[in-house]
Length: 248
Image (cartoon, rainbow, N blue to C red):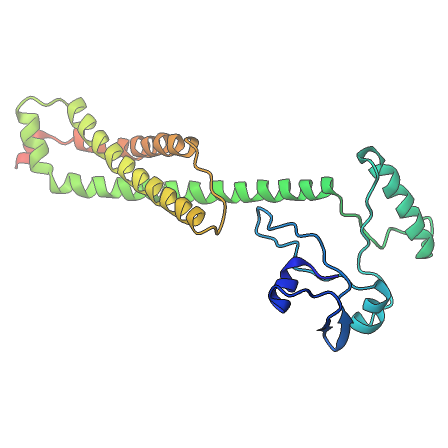
């Protein structure tokens, strides 16, 4: 039984029923076609398959004496636990396992897959939070160093402003504003880059992308916080400069 994908590739629109194909060194006759299902959202192609008799696969292709996996379908969702228990008892009896021995097989259920996906997603989120935190710290340190260099280069400007009546709070607000502005500018560039990459991936049909407003709001908030936190010390240092010393 051929899936739609190999049938199209091998026979290019011709009727494959009754024709011969070869899997490895074994020749098979096509007895029928599987119903076409189409690509899934993740890009998996369920039509790219061929079904052959189990005994033929074990003896002539795989050279195995055991099954790698067995697919069991329950008639109703509420029967899954009952079916799993019955299959467990059957396999333990066929594998000659003692009552104290652990199972030498495992079950893969939709619930188990969802739990694995959830754990993987949580681990990925924790890793992304860690990377983001390190990036914010590095960015904040860079902003603080930029402000410190700017203060050293603008000592005379600060002294002149103080002589013409600028208070320490005015100097502090000026450099805090510059710190927040630099941080917001970096956040805006990062948001634009992320948005562009997301739209590009969606346009190329590489990965599905969904753009929401939450990342933009978080980028604005965290950029402002980084600018404020790492700009306080340079701003206070600039405000403490003496007008006489700066002019001299």
